[in-house]
Structures are given as C-alpha cells and as structure tokens.
Length: 303
Ligand code: PSU
Ligand code: MN
Image (cartoon, rainbow, N blue to C red; front, side, top):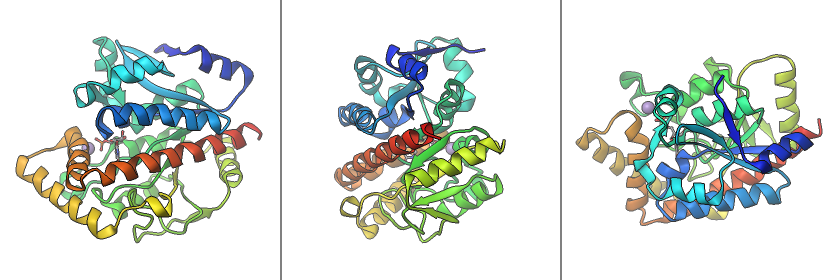
C-alpha cells in the first residue's frame, strides 16, 4: 500500500464527513505560466471553499503523495513549471521510488483521489485522442482512467487540439458516461460548442450527484465525465482559437514534438499565438469547474 499524506484540513474534512473536491497539479506546472498558475491554483481552492467543500490539490512532493497542499507547496510546484515531471499512471512508481516531485495529470489525480475516498474532481480539460490518433495511437491515459476509476471529473470538455469525436467514441466504448451540464453539446474548452452532442444533459448539480450515487451504488466501476461549458462572455472566438491550434499543431510537427510533451507544447503555443487571451479563458473555465464540482460534492454528501 502506498501511503497518502493528508493535510490537517483534509483529515478533519474526512472525520466530519464534509465534502472534498480534488484538484490536479499538472494544470499548475504544465498548463499555465508562472505566476498565473499559482494564483489560479489558490483561487480554485478558495472557490471550492466558498462552495462549501474542502479543496484537495494533489501532487507528489519528494516522493510523497500529497492530498492537499499548502500555499507554499503550490508555489514550490508552480515556479519551476514544466521542469517538474508530468506524472500520469505509468510514471507514478518512478517518481515515488526516486523521491522526486511530480505534477499529477487527470489520470494520476483520479488514482490518488479514489484511494483517498474523494469522489469529485475539477480540472480544465482532460486529455483524449489526439488529432491523427488513429495512426499515432496517441490516446491520453486519462480516458482509460475514466473507464476504471470511480471519480467524477468536471471539465470544460476537451480542446480541439484533440480529436473530439474520437475522444467521445473512445469514452462510449469504455462505458464512461458523458454529461452535459445545462447543454446538449459537449463543450470544446475555449468555446461552448464542439459540434458533438452529449447523450445526457442534466441541468442541476443534484441530478448529477444522484446519477453518480446510483452508478457507484450499483457497482458500475469507473468515472463520469461532466462537460461544463465556459461561461458565454468568457469564451473565445472559434475562428481565432482554431487558427491558433492549427499553427501550434504545425509547429509541433515541424519540431517533432511527441508523447507526453505534446499537450504542454500545444497549450504554450496557443497561449503565445493568442497573446494571452486563451490564458484568460483557461483560468475562467477552470474556476467555473471548481464551483460546479463543489456543488456536486456537497449534493453527493447529502445522499
Ligand atoms: N488538457 C488541457 N490542459 C491541461 C491538460 C490537458 O487542456 O493542463 C493536462 C491534464 O493534466 C491532462 C494531461 O490530464 O494534460 C493529459 O496529458 P496526456 O495527453 O499526455 O495524457
Ligand atoms: Mn499522449
């Protein structure tokens, strides 16, 4: 058994049966530049608290799996940014055994959240099937984790750096329910529309909590993906973001960027190409997800 290290606040939340929301750390190290990454990580924690739940940002520090980080630890992880190892399922034993620092992806965060008994997790966007994935087989381990690990992930959908259609097909094959929160269309991260529908639209966090509770009480293994679209006023113009994505993808191909480096490379490229507009949208949508995750966690704790 791998030991998890909890902050006192998280321990107290468990003892009292208070709702807890997991937050990932790759978004801090690889998803945004310093210092906005640290500011955002702290703002997410405040939003979860305001929503009546306890935030648990998850990361590996000096080989220890931390469930809940102090503001100093968040800064420690955010400053070196992409120099911190990005840790998905396969990377965990290497980082832990070497006593290194690691920022956990959606997949790795789900694993530790589930071990800790945390049911709800807020992120920005999950990984998925990359464009051209039918040839490269570049499919994020996040999808496999959603298939197997009992955690609900609140996201703003997936970026169109990925193949959204194939990502949804993969999730369907793996039996992962995809919920549109207040929308019939699966959101595309920076924009509210992707052109792909969701099978289930739910308009109330209580309804979502009920579905989660039912799924797991029935012993149906695996996660649930909630697509929570970016608020209307904060979304980007589809043409602008598509053009930036197209350019970033071309640049990645020219430079031969592959594997786990591709997502951070594209995110950075898009931010530069949109002169920071995408960063603003990115921050707003994650905050929006943290607020919804807190509501779902609160509703779930009453069932
Ligand atoms: N997508 C985003 N922002 C992110 C990520 C994905 O829009 O920060 C991060 C998440 O941590 C996600 C990971 O779990 O990238 C997926 O990486 P990969 O495709 O290498 O599995
Ligand atoms: Mn990949």
